[in-house]
Image (cartoon, rainbow over all chains, first blue to last red):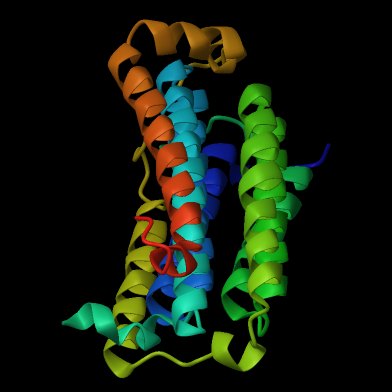
Amino acid sequence: MISLPVGELEFHVFVSIALFAIGAYGFLCKRSGLIALMCLELMLNGVNLFLMTFSKHHSSPDGASLFLFIVLVAAAEAAIALSIFVILSRRFGSVVLDDYRRLKG
Amino acid sequence: MSEGIVVMGQVNLFQVVVGILALAAAIGVVHSKSAVSSALSLMATLFLTAFLYFAKGAYFAGVVQVLIYAGAIAVLFVFIVMLLDLKPSRVAIPGQKGVALLAFAATAMFVVVVALLAVPGLFEPGLQESNLTALSAKAISYNFVSTYMLPFQATGFLILAAIVGVIMLAKSVRSPSNESRGEP
């Protein structure tokens, strides 16, 4: 396999931060609730890559354990949030976050 | 690369290609016109990240990523998007000015952190020979029942609460027809 003159640690940290930044950008800019949720998953994915990178760097299972916790919490969060969006879309007829004005009070 | 930076190992071509494809798929999540292609791009990103874990030697994490993230969560997203049948015009609504400013702040943070990567000696030196048994299922599960016992139990309770919550939410969809019959 061809090696490139870039450190593995630096490259993986770059990819994870870029995933987090793309997710944060989408979460803030998208008005559709489902796309915002997907961008939330992207941010969690970036953090997971960060944890696994440093878990390997220090040869410690702590980062890998936190990775598993994040995956489990993300699964629970996705299930709850998606069912909430199914109910909201039946009630309001859309998943655009700006349409839910009743919650503003 | 200067002498001061401690390098875990040079990155190989496979990792670079997979990493850049993962970033491209992540941009696809944000910039797709339709929600279905966003969900499929999300699935691609999660699969490619799993390949990065495999290339790293973290096989257990890669399998978990494929099974739970790409196999369950992303498929759930695709399923819900197909179920709701979203119109593309409602997906690509531009945000307000203030939100765009926040997004610019997020991008600026990214630039700052990437610039920090160029600082020599930023990271503590890792072990010279990477010990892959630390990332094995055995080490992780031992960690779960020793160091992280309380968070492990709390996560189990959280998932139980999530199951109960989803069941309650799914039942409440049919509640308008039930209310006429006097049921809660």
